[in-house]
Length: 250
Image (cartoon, rainbow, N blue to C red):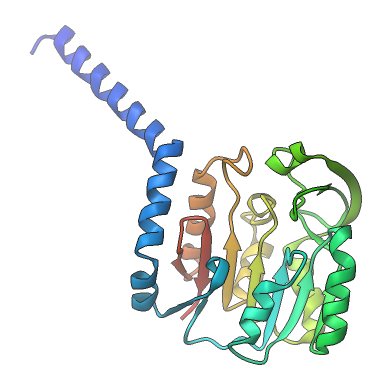
């Protein structure tokens, strides 16, 4: 093979490799992955010892949390209510959205076995700018979140880092399960630091809903980076659909 032919072969292989990588992160590939994950979710959950619930909720069947931290609760605490159907856990609702305040406070008052913290999970402690959508349930700290195009308002809310939040919640007991649905902020929250490593290892189970493209402009490989971070700490991982991930330590 001549030098020219060799260079041509190498160039062709490089181009094919680039095209393959682009396809892996394309919209079509995301749809295919989601379809395959969803179609096999029940079978994979049974093999992994995972209990599936509504809205892609899932829990490790062998673990029974007594204290649950529900971060990014939403208008109604559907996740906490589902966990309660599988056991009598104390629930800590955490949501900064002003329009959710009344409903969550009323739910806690009627329930009698939980608390409501009006806080936004963020990389740092202190005031942060939060966008509250006028028409969508979810707001976000992330500037590229698609709900920012729906109309709404920016408000200043109290931000709290994950280590600080877990320390705050210790007054209610040791947290065994954390659910995080923070509309894209999860990528900046899970930092690579000793404090974050200690915080992650404080909890037996984590259920994280990721928001890469198209919900935000954050690339999908960032999901895989956080998954790898948990696995390096000894957590097992399960996903019903490729964006909701359960991490637990056997």
